[in-house]
Length: 251
Length: 345
Image (cartoon, rainbow over all chains, first blue to last red; front, side):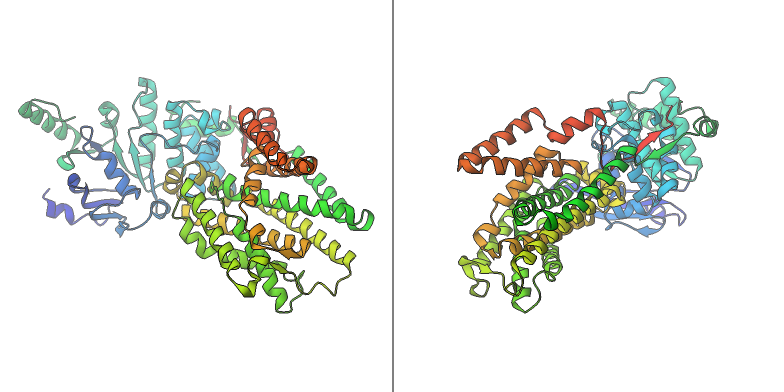
């Protein structure tokens, strides 16, 4: 796909990113990154450390401003909207380093997402939270303060809070690290179910065996540029070739 | 229950966990609420059966309870550690002076004075809420100092010598003191009940989330700026009411004392030693502060030294405050604000 074709983004995309650029002083972190994700599609975002993956998620979520380019949610330009507005338009994210509301219980953490993100109230909000906690296996610790959770449960809570928002676009940032095989299988099942509900997912992940079970397309970022894009098999093969050329793995 | 058992897990879970319920109230809370109503009713009758000697200290106590609860709304729930609430104490007092000078009945004008403080806090909030943490605390303090200087330099507001409350000469002294007492009680009850209702509402959930992590709160859809602004302005509104009541009580106000930073120190002391982020804590803190004030007032400057020592001891040995350290490990809650889930196994 040529850049111009990519710019003529599919009208139906839940999320499209057009020529996003970002630099810190003279250091370019992202340069002309474009891609789109359709409802019910999972796009895997891979690349070496420092490629700009988390910065890109921050820009999409509204935690950071980009220097150039556009972010569109269902065709609406949200480049200048604050993070909370984007969330209420159906965008949810998880943080790579978990950011729980430490003073709130696990249940209340997800309740914030259900009430503000999904706009639910009363019983509907409670049932939504319960569903998210069941999916992430956190119901047993629902009354515990989030600050008391160990790292793995904090990562689960990131996902629970995002799921409680009933997002149309979900950004996942390295949620599979440190899981056992059965836990990874359970997580893959959860992400699949969310995707099958019509949510567009962008998943940044180093654990490729988890990612490739769900992602139908991969985008490989390197030094802030799209190095490769396409079906997972092709991209990974392509990367293999490049690794052979450059004498190092880009992943 | 595991996450990976597919769609059946949720359905099966629903059948097995029919007991799933969210509790926000308890029998203890009902008893506490009923007890509070009885206590307020008994206190409302004080002017009839106890007289002025009981009214005077209680007016002070009620004002302390209100100030602590209002500071807790802002600092304990929304995470805004202001050091400049004396600005609104003074704004309320001087707004009452302005209203009474124009011929309004001073007691009827107390809500107006509160509203004036609330209105003043709105433009101020746009300036100070751009800052956070220590910068916010210092900025609010500086702002209170600016207000103090402005009043000091304004001859129409009495300048440095202060002003007396006009329009009270028509009142019989006994009635005037009873009215002041009832206003103080009303402001304290409204502050505590208002903060309690807010803490239980969706706003309270937002505020606690913003306090814990503003970045994560924004990404979960919470309007961080608006939540902070409401907490700040509502706190200023209530503090303005207290300022007006204190003025009506002493009949005299002076920029040097009403705009003094010692008011913020007292608010912080009460909330921190009582238990920040709870409804019970600031009330307990106000009672402790009031008791210490009464017991130690004869010791001159040693009073402040002893007060400071008490504050240090409590922050060291009970960092969650008296109520937090007592209640949290035992699961006590007289005024619950959270959500308790049952049917989770």
